[in-house]
Image 1 (cartoon, helix red, strand yellow):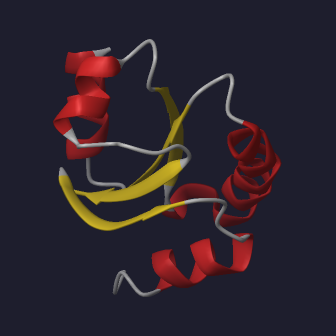
Image 2 (cartoon, helix red, strand yellow):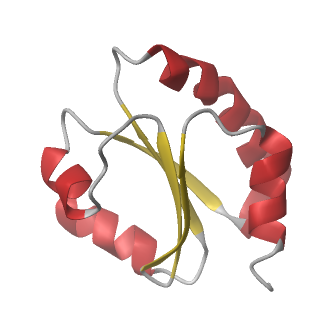
Length: 100
């Protein structure tokens, strides 16, 4: 996953990463919001999920201490990050403010 993750976040399309854990109740609340957001955002942004228990080295690299944590990457750089359940409209605002 490490090399593939790096390729994905370094790509030309902004990537919204959901750092989550299977045992996390708020993460389960975030999942349907993200699915709907991804459908509405289309090709504007790629949405991926990273299980922090399976990919602990990636989580450690980005200092993920709580889940869910969402991070928006643009050309490999974190341009926005927030923990907790994030409403769909807030996600649209963040992506729309990227200046794309």
